[in-house]
Amino acid sequence: MDPERARELLASERARIEQSLGAIEREGPLEGDTKVEPGDLDDEDLYQDEYNEGRADDFRRQLQAVERAEERLANGTYGLSVESGKPIPDARLEAFPTAERTVEEQDRIGPG
Image (cartoon, rainbow, N blue to C red; front, top):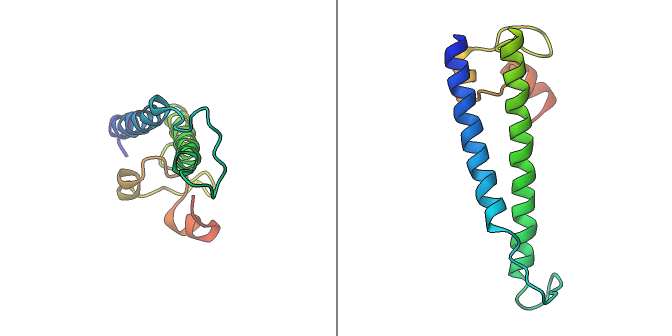
């Protein structure tokens, strides 16, 4: 893949993730001063806070993947599997710019 196209894809991915993460962080916790335990009436805010924290963690992991991809781009290894060194097809990188492995390798180790 052309390095300039890779930079565009990664910048777009970074912007998407940072925007999503920022929206969650700006919203802040919904649970107020009155402590409501899970299962109690009106515990939806507690559930939403925990759900949002899980989403934020996922976005942070995605951001780390972008950073690793940017490092590979700087080192000249972007588009090569971190496992085997085999080329990752451009179509896969277009769809999933932070891909670290070929589809076959990723299928062997599971989602991620």
